[in-house]
Length: 135
Image 1: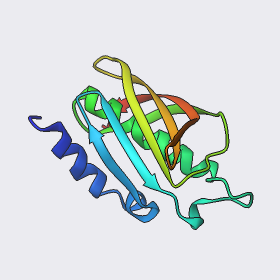
Image 2: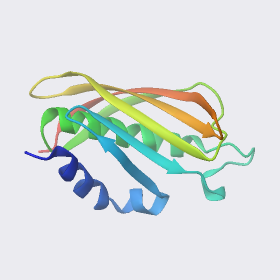
Image 3: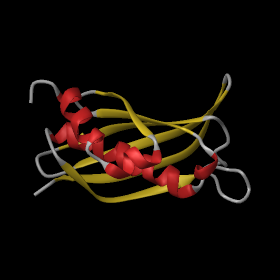
């Protein structure tokens, strides 16, 4: 595909859950993706931190985009794991994913999720996943 960012933007815009949660596809390249989310009260759990499910969504989707772009098209997450490093406190979350290895049948990707609060940028989660072409 000639313009992978246009392809990625089209795919992202067609994801009802991404639209529902308020996520944005900020940037993409041939093997990376950046997603962001402005934190709202409905994203938080009872302690005021962003819910782990929101972080997990960002990691999963960013990994799938990075892997899918590295594989050249539509893709699915085959598996992923996430480590929560600290509570996500801030006004915005940014997920940066990169394909670290890509072949014909799978891509291994890593993702860092940062919580932004004013000038503060804190790493709050790390994830790794395997992405495969959609059949």
